[in-house]
Length: 494
Image (spheres, rainbow, N blue to C red):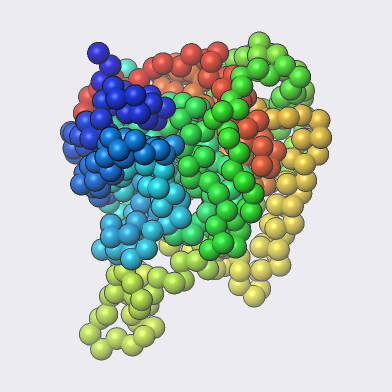
């Protein structure tokens, strides 16, 4: 018999609706799985088993009363600890917000609860979503459930949504929310062999999500497969008048319109992504993806995205600049940590609070951002970066006149060992090289598992689509999923 914790969103929701098992049984099974794995994986900052059981009881009661059930009815999920959850601590994995309990609910989490989902807990992440390995959290590293065969070295689950990716890959949560600023859904999904989608900027409300870089941050779904991501994204998305960047558009029926037939579609392969010294396994997985697209009926078209090589430096000017502005609100006055040395004045309190509350990577990015926004360097750095961002966006616009979607690798490598790259920030930043361009352009993009590398670790392929065309991204991703037949699971060691 299949364990309940092996099932994804669609199977759980449909099984509950049919009466094969109850939502309470599902919540109980996942609560137990979380409790068993938490000491080893550290995927959660806070667990909320009572919340999961409370939501499950409501779903069971609604089903018994013959009431209609929501899209996520009875599915317990992990909530990235960047989303404000009413009555439950929200920290952004930072000491400066430790103990902060919001009196309000983020729009995305509210929509998920209204759709019938329950909360298993708040998932660990890189502090303020700044990182690619989940090593910057004030609450300790998340450990990937994956290991190299015969090697017990702890691996990075990706970042910043590393708690989300680890929980889904370890089957201690059937799905999880993520946020993606420069690849923080897609890269961890690739590292752990799951699916993850970043929708068009503005498709999901940012209200109640702790801000990193406001023009880039976007919530998305992480789950076992493409279908589950589509279901969850439908529940999360929608216009929100409380968010000035929210798209006032209806939410399409992405799940009902899933179709892996790529006949009549053109898939773009950007020549600029063929980097010198590209990992051989990554290159092979990309070639496999191209072959799968052809097999699905698509026409392969080589395209050019000429400003791609400027994307990473552009991102690491714009994102820290916005972060330095957003994080200025953490000053020890209104909420969170307050460090008040004896006899200190207001400026001393600010300095002491931020020194104690922010981690090294957050401080580094605040300093970079403050520098590029300073009077003497604003035009030389920030203004120029915004101009280059526009050129990158135009590259995609031009490419989508020729093709329907773009296929590229998700990350330049498989998962690396914890500590392997954290000593060199520039090497860590290079993890975002394939994911950042779509973020700068605000485009929908998805990572799906493509196979294993020579070390037995997952690799992901990334599909990038036109603005508002999540359906095209999901359909192309489904075509890859069906042909990749990825079924590998991490060997349970926890």
